[in-house]
Image 1 (tube, one colour):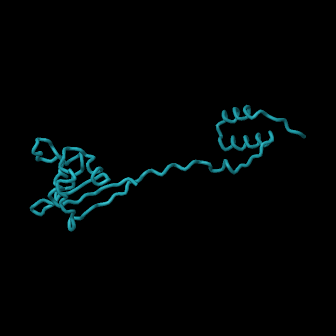
Image 2 (cartoon, rainbow, N blue to C red):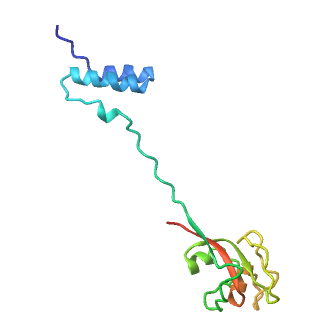
Image 3 (tube, rainbow, N blue to C red):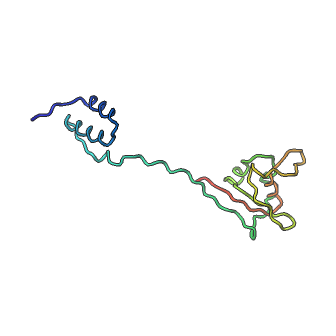
Length: 148
């Protein structure tokens, strides 16, 4: 018995209206085979494109209370204004938190850029600055994240 050729578009329209994708794929393969196409079920098995891997930042603490980072001097520009991106320009990463070792030997609490780090002193020209301005002349530690 010879099977009648069925227009693929008719079958596809019917299959899409039923909603069962696995069944649709199998039926469509049969229709293609009946219409003389060379088909294989393998391409339809588990053909879900993998989700792109999210970019995970690599984070680390630089310095410790027992081995802090030394003062960096005025060259890098930590003392300049309220810019919260200066860490990315100077260090190539985003500081998540930092601490300052004061002249009396005590450590500050953790400061978070843009949250709780507005310096109580102002620059000589009247502009405000962040507490990380003390990186210029105080020991310090920070937690920083770099994108891969």
